[in-house]
Length: 392
Image (cartoon, rainbow, N blue to C red):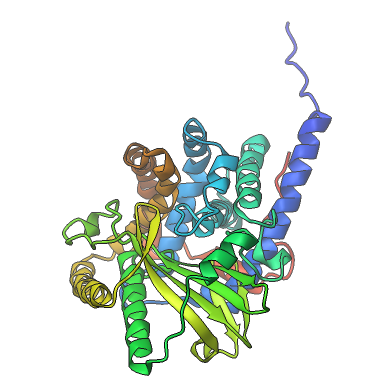
């Protein structure tokens, strides 16, 4: 009688690979802990959306489907190329999309572990997810670091000379009424991206702060995704005339910090008082041009009108879809990685098809409350590692 072959111990190369991935996971988990706690992400609530359910469902979609979809994506591009493509103004994907891959995948895995429903680790598969993130993250930053936490709370997409060149295009605004109009326009457009993404800030990305030669500081704020058409609820809207807007600001006497998902905090908090020069640009086809005053008024008016339509559409969603739309949100974040290759429609269709399986598997328990969002309290209260190490 033939005896079954004895299980072979993992090779040294495999063990080293998993150990390295676990080190990356620990560092990333610390960044997640800081991000969630400083911004109180674990207690998010909304009268319109089931935010915890959305997060868990989107995370399960990544946990169950991301490895196969990454393999498909890597037939179009590499992790290094994806990261290199982020080193320009208005880039999509950007660091929000990249860090969301890790956040979604490991939140889904940890939620399943906490519930006792996790599948056995495929250590090589999980290590590959981490390696994709690390390679792209280092390639995306001018300092080759991975996270703002380890680099003085900075997110440098631009090289020093590029930041100086951009700063040279900025100008002071002495007219206080003009400044108020600019602030109102940016607030209107930011709220539009927030509602468009179902109360998610994935369309708002800061990078920098860049220390300029004279000691001033440059911060770039990007509002993107105005003309995405992946979301079903967006298709009844007239598209905005630009892909996004970019506001570049030159500060003096201000301390700025940028955290994991491109959020900006400043000291003092009223950053407007420290601005000495700025400019708003329209983003079209990956290129910038100055946004004219009359154009900005029309753009803000159209965004405000679209925003009201979106509220009307979303008010009609039933309780199930207030969870299920998380698959669309997370799907769009992933789909954008194929955008630089011009294959976002094809890849987006594959993402949506695969995510349907996870939606069918998990939505009912999340809608009914049978599955609580254990990962949120875990992140909020756990003092040890946020994410369980990979088991080889």
